[in-house]
Image 1 (cartoon, rainbow, N blue to C red):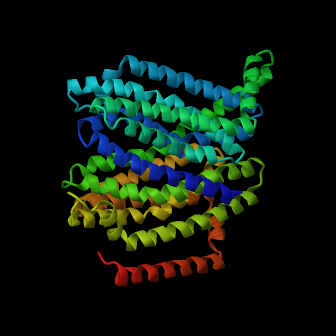
Image 2 (cartoon, rainbow, N blue to C red):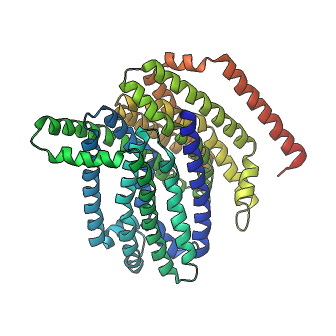
Length: 474
């Protein structure tokens, strides 16, 4: 069951990333790299940030343990949905009414005329927030039954809707093309919700929500009301720390961009391009593994089956360890070739390739700790220790920032990437400390799997060495 969930999630994420690449190419072709593309990216900034924070687990980390424990699951899920939708709809109305001042906050350097043009786009794109929340809620409920297909492939629908919008806008004026693309975002959100309706109906969750409406309406039974309210209170107690923990990666990226602006020209671009490649194995393998594993671990912990939870963690650890180790070694040996193949054309020179490859290599040092920490943090989430996980993330962010300030003085953009890897090790070691080092070493000590991993890494090294020596040399 775990492997089925892993392959479903990883294939969905990979499909989305491939479509996202084509979306970026079409966006560049249709809008260029100037005023109109800047307008759209500003308008899509907050909805996209919200999507990434929720999509990478902030909501699930709090919802699933609460859903497992709730006595009245229909009322619990429906009330959470109503609370969030009410807040988000009110927020969307507020943004629509005061779009220009909010646009000014999002793009402080824009001129008054440009803000006036961007404001309607910000208002349109903001309506994606309630849509993506409904997708997140439905996806979390489906994961309770270990059904991952709709959740895994729904991001691909957003990219597909944006691609279709860009194709329709090929012969349009630039501003009209941005408007069409913005409405394409909303169409993608609606398509994502529609994709979840089929499994929601088949697995009886729509009926559960209908029953939840009856549970909320029946205020005569005080014990029901108290039970739902207690579950909701516990959810929000865990949700805010989980959201803070999920936001640290975005905050770290913002800090790196800010610090890179003080370095030589090109530093921001090197970090952006290198990080885009670095995020691919992290998403396809680490996020896919943690998404497939979390419902299983949360269920075992809820049923006091700690041994079964440890066994599930052990299997996913070795799968992820082997995959990320192969990616780390392969990426390190082929970093120059990968950057050359993807980016070296036009104004992206050979010097840019070598610099960007060095940054990519520094990021790769942190691939294993960042990826593996995701699965061990599930242990904390299952025990409703989201606040502790958030403190670990915040401390790692502080350590990473301090090292960034130091290392950038000597190594520039490479130092910033390496500081990020150091923060990954901090997260990993602190998570293991609270998980239990003794349990970790029991999982790690598997002589058969250690030998297999070493053999695969050795074989990969020889194949890549032969490839670089006799077939392709940059």
